[in-house]
Length: 280
Image (cartoon, rainbow, N blue to C red; front, side, top):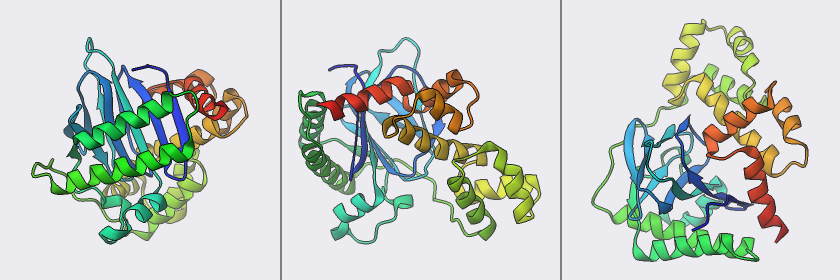
């Protein structure tokens, strides 16, 4: 098992092979998120404030926009993982025979078993990403098989991990704030502008935002900034310093810390991991 970073984008969303050797801050993603252990120490993610084991036999399942974090115990070996960030349209099409698709409440448990077939598919994904000429179509086929196998095993599993119900985004003022933050890449300077425009007190805005989304405005801003940071790092050809500046980071080192605390690796290594796959 190599510790090198591998990142691939496709119709499925993105897949990242990374090593976790430190804590990841509380964060979320606009994707349904599946986390598989492929080497190293057993560990835990925290999903909805509940520890969820990440082992050879147990996968972590996180709905879109659901806050989670990684807990690293000092002194333990790193944990190598495959992280899937699944595009909603791709996942809905893959799951078309199983009823309506709601990315905010898709997984019925935050944990699921990893069967022998799922583990075999998982290792095939790892081998493909680490191989001399990884094919995006081959990776996508393997991922579709892995996702379906995992969903099936999760559906028939008797053991479940408790979860909190998802909040509903019913307040039009908060919906407007969410849309504004998404359109402005989570710019921190826009909060006071939003509060003034929608006519709420600051305290009420923060309280209602948390009630409607399950996360604070600051956490939501970080989600939006992180996705834009990944896009600029993987897809854009501009320098990382320019990417940092465009996202409002005055110091490239601050941008690097932000990126590493959310993805486990620096933007330079993340870009290198994606570029190596593209160049083969």
